[in-house]
Image (spheres, rainbow, N blue to C red):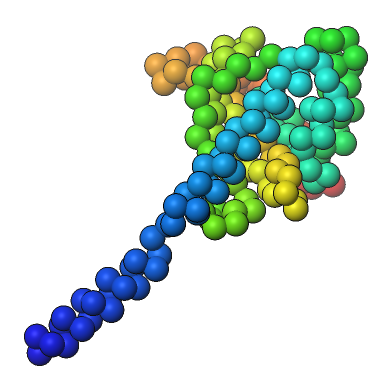
Length: 179
């Protein structure tokens, strides 16, 4: 019985060693995370610099941007149309990263990542989160969500302020979904 137990323990040890990340995998993971961080940093910088082409080239052709207003759920083309006047005036937005976390679907040849970030913006502290996808050797932003942060002790005041607007928005959505 002891021999069987020892054999099983040795097999489990060997199998678990095969799942340990190698130095190369860890380096690749760190390199990919750095590349994704650079992509998002440059994306924010291109907005601040009102560089329309570079900003939207960071997004995939299927990109989605969800803004802080409940109505802002844009395809890349809708977001371009909305944003173009701001970029043309040289007055796009300027978001400064406070912190960011990047995650990958695999340490070995990752092709999908996601992130969350805290941003210092003209609206105060906001939270951004998104999904990035690798096309060949290039990462692109697939989906981005921008949210205004609200301290827990201020939420009741915000609810009072937005209650009327929210009820009208919901009513309009319900009417549209019926037709």
